[in-house]
Every structure is written in C-alpha cells, then in structure tokens.
Length: 249
Ligand SMILES: [Zn+2]
Image 1 (cartoon, rainbow, N blue to C red):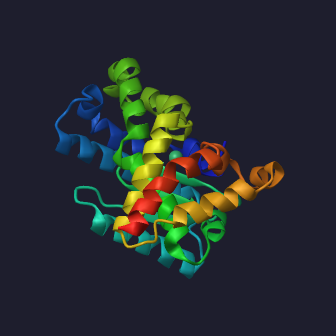
Image 2: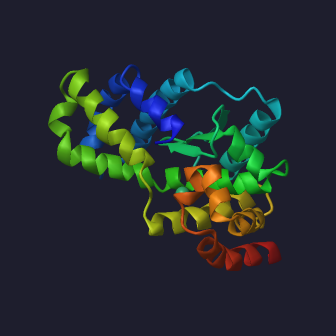
Image 3: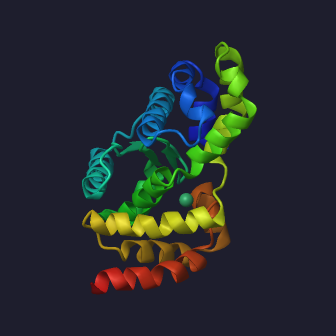
C-alpha cells in the first residue's frame, strides 16, 4: 500500500467522517442535482486532504511547490466549468506517487515531480491526467455506488461504522486501479487539459518514452504509480495522434 494511503487510512475518521455524514444525500442518490454532488465531492475531498496534510508533511522544496501550484492554477483557468477549485500539492514521500482526491485535490510525491523534470510540460500531463480522473469521477462514482448499496443504513449512524467502512473499503476504492477505459479517458483528457493550460502537449510523449525505455527493475524501483497504469507503449500509441494534432493546430 502506498505511504499516502497508509497514513490516510490510519488517521481517517477525525475530520472526514463528520464532513461525509453531512453529505449523505449525495451518497443516496447518484443521480442527484449536479451542484449538490459537486458540493459533496468538495467537502469529502477537502476533509480527506486535511487529514492527509496532517499525516504527510509538505515538500520543503519551494521550486516543486511553485511548479505544481502554477500548473494547477493554469489548468483551473483553462477549464470551462469553474465550480471545482483545482489544486496540486507536493508532499514528502520516497516513492514516485500521486493521489487524486474527489473535489479537485491532487497530491504528488517529490520523486514524481523530480522525475518529470524542471520543464513543466511533463508534470502538466501528470497533473492533467489526475485532474481528469477527478473530473470524470472515476473514483467518486465507485465510492458512491458502493456506499449507496452497502452503507446507506450506516451513514445515519454514529461515526464508528462509517469510519470503519471508509478505512476498510472506501479508501481502498480511491486507491484501487482504474479500469483500462478510465485510464485511456484520463490520458486523453489530461493531454487536452495540459495543452489548454498553455503547456506543450508533447510532454506526455517525452515522459512516456522515458518510461518505456526503463528496464523492469528500474520501473519497479520508481514505485507503484506508473506500474499501476497501462504499459507506456500502449499509452503512447493512443496519445501520439492527439498530440500531433494539437501540436499541428
Ligand atoms: Zn490514472
């Protein structure tokens, strides 16, 4: 289990559960009013983000922080739907890792930012990809569906059962691998977001080409983040036509 999720799972319950209980109506209806669902997502994600910040220190590297904050702001400016505020924060962690929380919070580990390099184009693709998972509600929908079928009766109860469900199941849904289809969608939207925010869309290609050239032991040493995604060659094959089109236009 990644350190980020391990810390989050251990602590979870203090801030998140009361915040989530307030949003139970959204859990009960996956077809709820769009504004209400967005509000539920934001308060759920911000409760988790608060707990994550309390357990995982921020990166002391001002350049990493500046780079990721700036990319998130540029993507936020470029997105037509202004109802989510998008943020990217860098935390201290040994492995290459990223985590997307509902509502618009992306957390990146220092080695991931370092791997993407000082030019922001590759990092913009990574952040765009994670933002795309949030915008398309890939993890949120899984959580809402499970909660609706399994814990609706518990939601109204005291902190205990809901906290337990979140620790044992809910957080697991946030970290479990996305479907192939969701990853393809996040890659394509991620490139479009990075491009709309003013970055070179080919950043995705240079990053994936570097990954493709790594030997399996080197890839394993980086951590589970890239290994939990489809192989770099498959991602490249799907992204090349889009990147060429965007660069040509
Ligand atoms: Zn992904």
